[in-house]
Length: 105
Image (cartoon, rainbow, N blue to C red):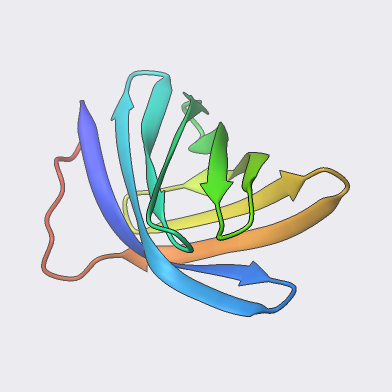
């Protein structure tokens, strides 16, 4: 089992939203939380040996809860995902949180 915390930026149509993303992995599965907008938003998904990740989750806002899927790359040092919400996309990018040593695979 491995885990890492990243400082992330969610690039929304109304501007960037800053937060953290915590990822826990075990062989080919991942889960964790994206902490932006209205707090902790959990997700789950899969990751392959090439660090290609696919996740699904929900984002809570003041007005509603939005379902999303996301795909991209997750490495020990960085995360880069394209989030799909209906026919729209948003980018989530980030780097490992300094001073927070996760548990390496």
